[in-house]
Every structure is written in C-alpha cells, then in structure tokens.
Length: 185
Image (tube, rainbow, N blue to C red; front, side, top):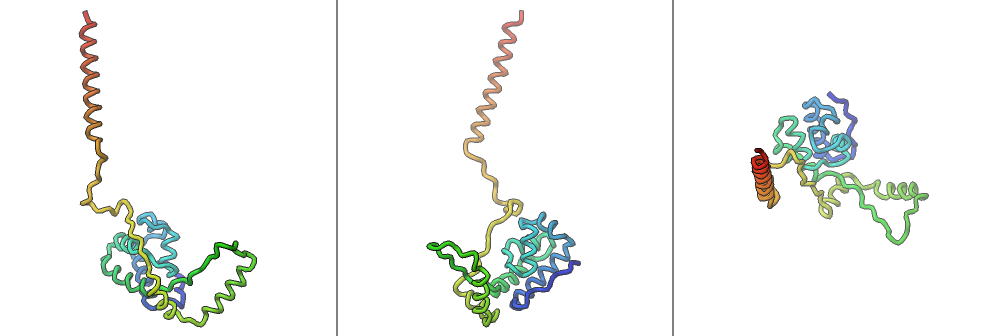
C-alpha cells in the first residue's frame, strides 16, 4: 500500500472523503501512478494532483480508475459530484493588458493577497465560488473507451476507389496474358 502524504487541512469533508476513497481504490489496483497513467488517459502527474487533493479529477478519470479497479463507476460518480460541488476554487487572478507584469514585486503582491483572504474559511470560499463559477468537466473519452456500437465510418468513395483499382489490375493481367499469347509462336 502507498504511503500517502496528508491531505490539506482546508479541504472540505466531502472532498477529503472522496480523495480518500480514490486513494483506497488506487491502492487496491496494486498499480503505481506510472502504470495507472499507462492504463488510463491521464498522466502520472495528473493522478498525483487528483490523489493529493490539489485538483478535482475529471469524471472520466474516475470512471477510468473504476474500470481498472473493477469497481462500480456509478457509485463513485455520485461521490465525485458531491466532492466537485464542495471543492475549493482558487481565487480569480486578473491580468492587466495595458501594463506588463511587474515581476520584481511578485512576492509583495502574493503576501498582500494572502493577508486579504486569510480570514475567509474554506466553506466560505467554496460557497462563494460555487454559484458564480461551476466546475466544468472534460467530457473527452480516450479512443479505447469509444462505444462499440458506434461504427467507424469509412470515407465516401473509398469503395469506388478500391473497385476501380481492382478493375485496373484485372485489365493489366488480361492485357499481359494477351500480349504473352500473341508473342508466343
């Protein structure tokens, strides 16, 4: 079993519970993060962020982990929805297009920003951002998860091209046979 680093204290209980369940599920697979990344469409570093609670995983990542572990993806999908609603969102950063960024004073700005938001609790941050900015899941599926009932369409004209090629080959063979028959005494 892996030795996981402690989850951040500011994580809401729903998120903490979800990440702990994902960790248990990953440990049951017996796979390293590299091997898990090879079996899913998500890299080792992505799994590190998901399993350390620093970033919410896309729903498809949870489904892929459930598939690899042989677990019910629907049950984890419900837990995912609850966790994503409560997941703390980073404070929005504004960038001024009229002035270039002042890199020399970056540490001072960060210190001032940290002091301004220090009084807000994790629940307040999650609640404030939940209504104005919803988490968007990435609905992309890896090629191996494409539903089997969706046929792979062939480009139009491919069949006609193959038929024309077969006719040309047949004509060349017949022509070669005729030439061979005429030239033989």
